[in-house]
Image 1 (cartoon, rainbow, N blue to C red):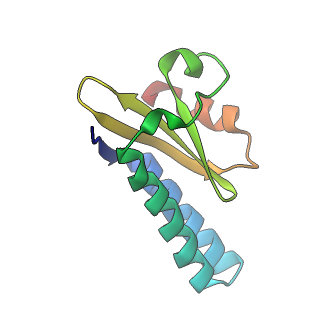
Image 2 (cartoon, rainbow, N blue to C red):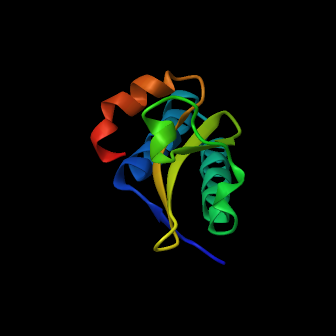
Length: 110
């Protein structure tokens, strides 16, 4: 069965920040466009079998069903609503960041 993929406002802001960093700080506009395209392609691919990626291993996110999908040097954090068949993209962050700290900043929305 196919799922609807919903990208949160925070995740959209994350994508804009990633694009801005690569484009303006690294001065690589083509790379920025390609990176965002790869991330979005993989995000949209979650419409089929979103459970294929592992649960985030730390509490309280593990119990809440938060999943983590790697995409190049980034990670996509998402929740699955099985009742409504919706995949909710919560955040898209650089994999080298302190993921737990980023989640704690946004804990209320997860």
